Image 1 (cartoon, helix red, strand yellow):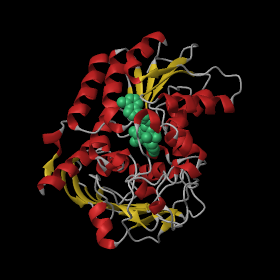
Image 2: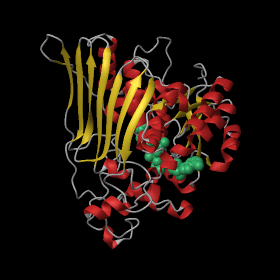
Image 3: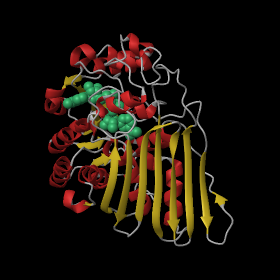
Amino acid sequence: MTADTARPRRCAVVGLGARAQLFTQALTGPHADRTALVGFCDVNTHRMAVHNDWLAADRPGREPVPAYAAEDFDEMLRRERVDLVVVCSVDRTHDDYIVRALEAGCDVVTEKPMTTDADKARRILDAQRRTGREVRVAFNYRYNPVHSAVREAIAAGEIGEVGSVHFEWLLDLRHGADYFRRWHRDKANSGGLMVHKATHHFDLVNWWLGTEPETVYAQGGLFFYGDTAGRRRGHARPYTRAHGSAAADGDPFAVHLADSPVLSALYLDAEREDGYHRDQNVFGPGVTIEDDMAVLVRYASAATLTYHLTAYAPWEGYRVCFNGSEGRLELLVEETTWVRPDVRAEGSGPVMHGSAVGEDAGRTELLLRRFWERPREVKVATGEGGHGGGDIRMLADLFGERTDAPDALGRAADATDGARSLVTGLAANRSFETGLPVRVRDLLDV
Ligand SMILES: NC(=O)c1ccc[n+]([C@@H]2O[C@H](COP(=O)([O-])OP(=O)(O)OC[C@H]3O[C@@H](n4cnc5c(N)ncnc54)[C@H](O)[C@@H]3O)[C@@H](O)[C@H]2O)c1
């Protein structure tokens, strides 16, 4: 990224949906002195206007951020003299904006997943090398203090050499179901949960262990959501989208956009421009992603990973256990302990997205069990803000003052890290199709 200078970097955000607010608030609030927000770009002009309304409400008198249609992206970079592009659009579109931004001489911060297939990942890696510009992938989970504590314990040799990792991630019936209502339900948009969601988790394992994946075998399918499973278990109700459908009343799996001012503004009122429905029936047709996935990975370090992602659990959180040559490290995080059936939309913001802790949150426990010693709990102060305090720390690292001291935790993720986490998910998707193990470098040599 450009060296620190007196002039604030000029930053544009592409994709002004829900996630973009994290960046627009940071760039007009705590990080405004170093990075100026100078452009919005989206296919939907209404959503850009909503973000400008929110900024004006927070800071009366502020000039609106100039808003550009998607086809005017290059024009925006030129006219607004953009130095840095934050890519926050639908996953399948990331590569196009990243490559065009790099070629225009900009640095890039991209939301995860960096992209959705191997060809797109190659284009990004090539463009990054060719231009010498910087790509940062917004892996906020690396900045969660409890995840940092895991990395520190492993790096300090507390459990010796890591032989294997056992990792289970549960998405509850509120957050998990949400992937089946939105654009994510089409694998072409998101790469499925192996890419869209598990990219976080595969990145954490790469980073915790300081290694990279070599071989992946996986089995997965649509067990709970979708029309076939919904009919079979009697969950299915006769509606396509919840808004305006009497059949969706009382459906605990429905989200009611009109009940939430935020969801109405961002999606319901924006539909006339792009016809996008954010409240589709999770038991309706057209779901092409999996909801239950089992993955076995072998790493360059010779460690193995057994990983399971379930999108229909009664509670949300994860367990990760590291088996080492001198002991075992066990992490338990309960983000919710149960899900109420009667939340129509009010829990649909950061809580639904798993980026904030809800009222039914449970506990976090990190336990070190060294050979021949009593178990010892590693105390970790979790921070405020989304993703266990990870979001705030990541924003400070991305947009705050740069220091010469290297980050001992090595949390900054670049395009290679983005590709290495992506490729595990891509290999898992390939293995779902073929039933065979996949050599990672046959997909993407990174
Ligand atoms: N790191 C995290 O924890 C986290 C959390 C949530 C979302 N995300 C990521 O943020 C991104 C956005 O997710 P979201 O939840 O805000 O989705 P969203 O549906 O709310 O917003 C997506 C936006 O992209 C726009 N868009 C669609 N096609 C486009 C195109 N061709 N060009 C420009 N804009 C286009 C849409 O109009 C919409 O405004 C995704 O990549 C997602 O993975 C990351």
